Length: 361
Picture 1 (cartoon, rainbow, N blue to C red):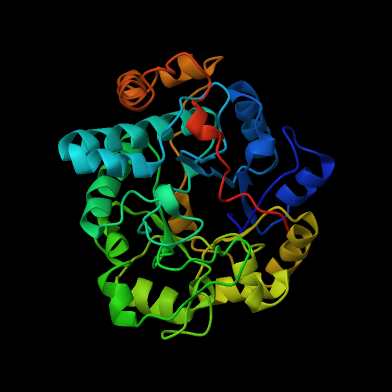
Picture 2: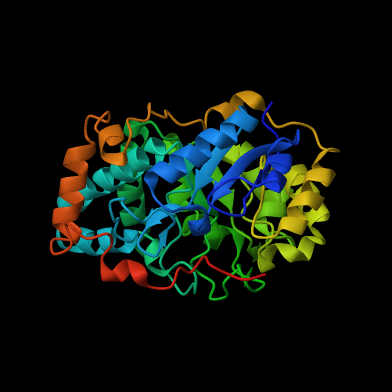
């Protein structure tokens, strides 16, 4: 049975404490961070070990491209999605081809090391947000929709489910919800007619959504991830979306309005989330696991749609990725388009910029 919690682990191999948490009944997922990654072979061994201790578990990662990339050493660099938007302004057809290639390439390499899903794509508009920026495809809605649809087509072709974030849009407010409370005071109509459109118009390609830790004050006094109005009334009923709803990390500052971590987990699940993420706080993870015992299990059929098509390991990343028919072509296309002078290096300089999703508790 898949549980309602997704937690993280300490390092590059499981500790006894990690195993104890993973085995708990309501832990249904593990998310990996950069601290859990040495190279591809190590990540695959780690994922295989996780599944030895809990077969019914989703393993996720944030492998968006650009600054947000947990898998780096030996993996093909991916551009920030904003670079696809820049290319779209100059050559829309080429940008759409590259969006597909990015989605396929990312998914193939993530699946190859035993990870089910990357929480992607970002469907937020590029506005004034301190944390979104070039993680967004574009500032114009129709460009985001076109590029994101192609990116998701690529992901699905490789065998990975898609997750749109951060519903209904984080780009129009400056505060970073990782470290501060974020409030958007626009009307529901304004939000629905602008920021929400990339989500609404790509629903056929979306398997999951992740709501923002943003309070849309004219709609509800709770962050979207704790709001029955957003999750049940709008996502489930108005949009008729039956995919998975992941909470964003409940350790983020934007989630603290709901109380301690036990209260946050219960609030997220009761509002309509299927799986609650608790990351970068081991004490909180234990508290969350205890609190989750009181909650019902999520819809199992729904959760299973997020399981990736993970290939047999062939000894190294390249040999494993060769099992994906289009991997080599996608890799060459992206490397030549975005990193022509760094084809043989580990990662181009622009990937060394500060990761906007890194934050301390």
